[in-house]
Length: 438
Ligand code: AMX
Image (tube, rainbow, N blue to C red; front, side, top):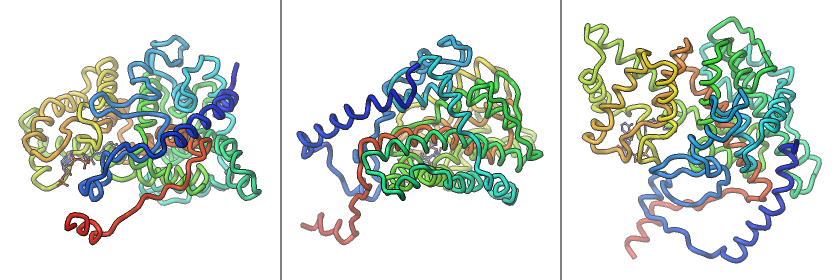
């Protein structure tokens, strides 16, 4: 079996040469222009970042190394070992994102074993997590837990010892695999501490996602499958999203992967980004509470009424809209398909379906949003809720376990390709005015 490390080391010289050639021969080729709108409008659409692992098309949605979500479901190794039988393993996607190759089941199994072997948390981290107040947001706890694991960074040590920069990526790879390996237990400790008895049980005979489910306290093969799907689809969404971009930016200063991704987690914790999945459930529960109290059914009419109340209060409809996408998110669609297969009669799933029927029309009528369709966060919560995972304040932590894979695979290539410190130019309002008054 060719290992992940061997596969990567064989690819690096060719990729380095290719990028050097592109830069040398075509470095001055113009690929875009920047308007004042873009400069003050959150840099939407400005092409200014290299991203190897995935690409987002506004109409079609995400492709991981060229593969759509249905492609991944068809070709990546699954738990049963039979392609297409069940959801892809997270380890399969990790391999794909890092190497751009579809791994064999044997390769994926070796990666599972490697991740399990790197999972142990440093001794100071568990007492630290146990000491945190139960009402501290789970994402804050998650960020603290990962930052505290930084004592294990082999990259930070190697840098300190003065290794040449051409070798950085080898140490970064070590850290990346260790971070991905350690996140589930940090996440599980937080979940068990905040909502249960603090006890975390492992089962390392299972894959990464299955073992994570056991650590959270769930023992249901159907929930394992949901977690595999969930962890795969949230990994990567090209480079410009706030969590991936933050990881890349912080990593560009040669901060190690532990603290680079902890920074990414803090970006994910914002309500316009990863926290939206918790906000969706909160919105649905508020809607149900209101109409239950009024003795009214939740249907197209009452959802429409509630949506307008939200919009008129100048709040966003969580789970709808996107900075890049202009169609229904394929990550929404695959979760909907999962629900149709595993829980077609679930009450909350039906509410989500009804919201999907009316919301694009409402948002079009509202007339502001560039994209009136649902994104990934609009569906994930109800699937978890179905299995009794109702602690929605925690949902973004699951997103954070997954997003590590995309952000950190790219971070490997950032260092392997020797990408520089990121430092875009800012401009003053006076300078912008001077441009239009010329
Ligand atoms: N409900 C109400 N208003 C919305 C809206 C929504 N779901 N989505 C966008 N708008 C508003 C914006 O706030 C903006 O209003 P403004 O002109 O008064 O400032 C206007 O429509 C134009 O915004 P846009 O160009 O359509 O979106 P954007 O690129 O600026 O922002 C996003 C994208 C995701 C932040 C936005 O659609 C939003 O706030 N959605 C709800 C939160 C959410 O679901 N976030 C999760 C996204 C996926 C993820 O990262 N996990």
